[in-house]
Image (cartoon, rainbow, N blue to C red):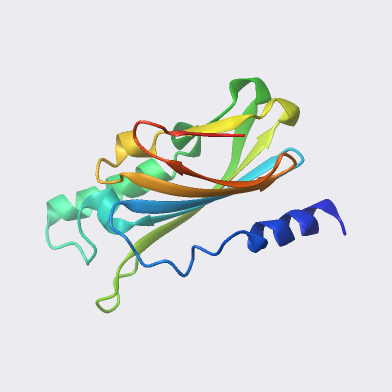
Length: 162
């Protein structure tokens, strides 16, 4: 089995948290490391980012959505891999809710980094908690050459390490 397929298989073998109920203030981050590429998939309740989960009702709420989207599009500011790994953001995709029905709304985002020195990659710090004060927990699952694992990040512990 080739390494990318093996990593994908291991990643999906981790305990499934996708079935977990939508919890305000709690996001989910999946991290896959393959050679020099780090892929991060973020699921964030809209309430944690802007304080509501429905279509915006006024200009203040529209601005909050626009600001959140702008912040989430700045991968290099949100995720800081180990400096010695010399990683740079390659792509960002942010999907904001479309507000259909009364369902809970989530923001889905994916980020890809390339690292010039992947052997030096020992962790990733996030600034999500600094930007989104209503976010109090980020459940992280990771898979890569160092194995697989899970970690809970909080405002007091914003660093994923392995």
